[in-house]
Length: 287
Image (tube, rainbow, N blue to C red; front, side, top):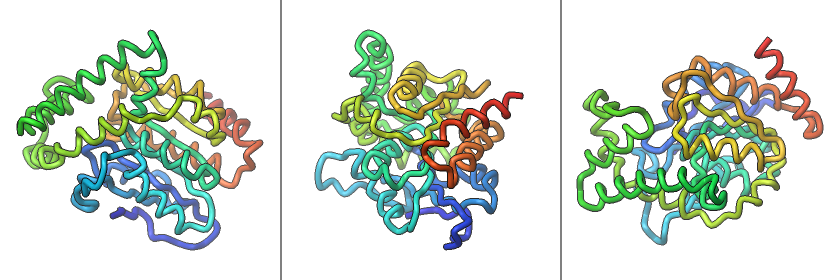
């Protein structure tokens, strides 16, 4: 159910990191982050429903983020101390659900363009165009899945989050893997868009949080990233130059060090000192 990118050690000196991949991806997307963290951390990357390791969603009830979050919460319960939580896109939405379920167990959060689409519904005119954009994409993909056009659905999915023609340029093996995953896509959109959580709930997450956003992010996730920075008491946004929504995959040489710096900087730091340490780190990174 999980990929482990470092031999787990129960020594107190090693930090625990749980990293959640984006929709249609896999635990392997975090290999570069694990290498960047080195022997300072143990990184676990549980895969989501729809992957080969986790299997299909069982269908006992309407799918929610809480269902996806259960696997990560189970890993956290096995740990003696706090963990650092990383999430990309859909994985970021799941990470927020995990943090809300067990805030006392989270040492820090790192979110790359978390797909908390439900926030757009609560932003009035400021979120209306972004919400209309992402719901149109979701409708197209869901229609493709319903009619059996999995390839067409995945072409729409990949080209939206990456660039026009991106799916056609993929290796056939990767295309086939995404086509097999396609029936999960509507569940992810349903869980993210239909989330009934009020925006104010995020104001209770007083956790050091780094929010990363690609310079060329789609409007929905750009809007969400900056709104979360307003809602989360210790939330900060850094825009990644040259990157888009898939920054952890396309620009790991920039994204991974930013994530690692945040994790290392908040490790074993008292809550009241976290914001000051974070600010110093970012200043040093620029100078």
